[in-house]
Length: 250
Image (cartoon, rainbow, N blue to C red):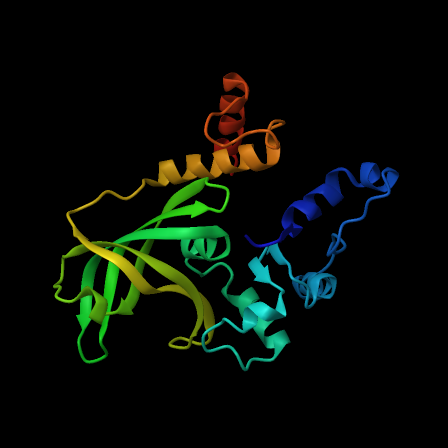
């Protein structure tokens, strides 16, 4: 899994517990003054993590500061490092979020998709209604959904519009140039391909509940260092109250 630094949380802490941090002799990296412009905040963030093996959670989305990560960016291998960072900043809120999450954190990923379009000239197929099921290295996991993805056609032949498949695949990053340069995530190298029937996607409410539970388990629960992830040992009433607070937040 990636080594993260939650800059967004650090900025919140610097505002609300500034004195406590100072008294404890702690300092937080990448924090800009409250009156700083967006360009100034971006400059300070870059200076704090420049060329470090850190994936920062920022107001612009995930920013992967590790220079080694650029080597695996399809179509971006020759970008200057600063241009690479600026491109991530520009793309951060437009990427396929569940593919991004799987790329950085999952040990394996299972996908389901329905054939929407076939381009036999280019040898590609577009899947819609993408179901994502991924597992972390520690055995926990998550599910999600994406709108569509283009993949090589050959592994799925014979197929036609409306056919549904399940498959394992690698998630990769690439630079797309159709409407200006942007970074996004795609799927390749499908394996264990199976033709399946129609399938259900998780609802938005289910995904919001999953996100709330992840925050509770990883950031709020006092037992997070002692839990095996299979059975929740936190007080049920406390857990439900935390769910209500998070889900009601705007």
